[in-house]
Length: 259
Image 1 (cartoon, rainbow, N blue to C red):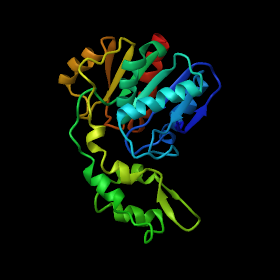
Image 2: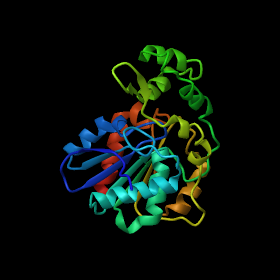
Image 3: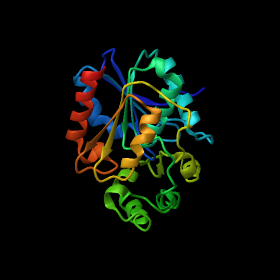
């Protein structure tokens, strides 16, 4: 079985695994990882399958990503790590915790609930799938092409981090867009109704994000009875990037009193 790619920062025995969101990569979290490493954590920035530098597969589901994470923990002989997941990564972490609670210390879930979400990435995925790198020869040209589909500049800049030079002459995408363009239903999947973990869990929501609503607190507590739910002021769905200091402080403070 393939092992997902990771960048490991720090050399402590206190492991913190970070799983990025849909169309992201572990490198998006490098700044936070360096700060946590200075506080005594060994931080694993994991690229989930079909993302970043990890392997590509036609199989793409939370079940498969949970298996990837289990294989990674076994390969690295990790004992009782802390898991942090944002968005899609949070869904992977939640499922993993319900299957492997005894092998973990704590969970941090960033701006996602254990419920089903309706597909809402279609325009983004259409735009990425339409990028023709036989014509596009620079990041600026890619940005211009993507702007027809994605109007928000910050969102485009996030997506364009997936562009790299496949060869000295040709750009490409690190994400497996041919698989991911059909993944909206799989990404929106909620937890099974009987899935549960009693691990200490912190849910952090962005104040101006609609991913975690007040009515979602019941389903969060159903699946994670020891969950705390806190809010990051003036933050949307990318709360760790929009309010990095507040996010870092909240997570670090909670971990210091929990683990």
